[in-house]
Amino acid sequence: MLFSEKIGRLDGHGQDHAPLYKQLQRALREAIQKKILSPDDALPAERDLAEEFSISRITVRKALDGLVSEGLLTRRQGAGTFVAARVEKSFSKLSSFSEDMISRGRVPHSEWISRGEGQVTPEESLTLGLSPGTPVYRFARIRYADGAPMAVEYTTIAAFALPSTEIVETSLYEALEKTGHRPVRALQRLRAILFAAEQADLLGVPVKDAGLLIERRGFLKDGRAVEVTQSYYRGDAYDFVAELNALS
Image (cartoon, rainbow, N blue to C red; front, top):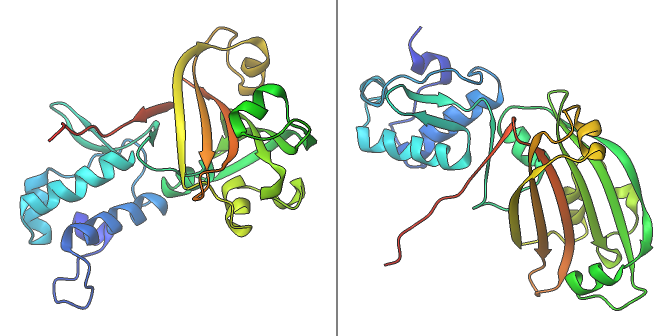
């Protein structure tokens, strides 16, 4: 079977007004989401894709570059381009865990550790810019992809952003979007850690196994901080990527 028959041909006759590289990106993304292409599957060489889809190699390279930056594809020196097996999280896009997993063709779900209402702590007060005694909601969850534990997540949300904790089902950002309080930008800090007993037990990994801690502070369009999250990611399952550009 030709690769174009596997993922679908491009519309070169103008009915789809998207540029050809966008069409190829969409076809590949949908094939990954529908599991037509599986983790670690190799893509044909760029010259073969260009010939099969009757497009230029520059167009193919532009399409693949975009999917590599999204973390859906990965390049291996001397071997070619492959569907990413490990989860690659891009720092250039503010998205939820659920959105990341769905875009990669994986099925996300969460297991609640705890959720409830409380008052802001002194540290949270400084981080979120809230007055002492202000109510907040706290969420602690284990995040799964295709049934495998990927991360432990602890989040504090300013109470003005949600009517209650019960509105949060699978995606916290989806709940915040419904109330008009989804963060539009965030500050994130990543550091390597060794898992303490609590996180190791929740993730099913050995104590002192290597992991990644992401600390995120999310902001609304008006500049108010609305979210503080600490996420402990398994080091054997997650890669974080960032696109860097030289100063002009």
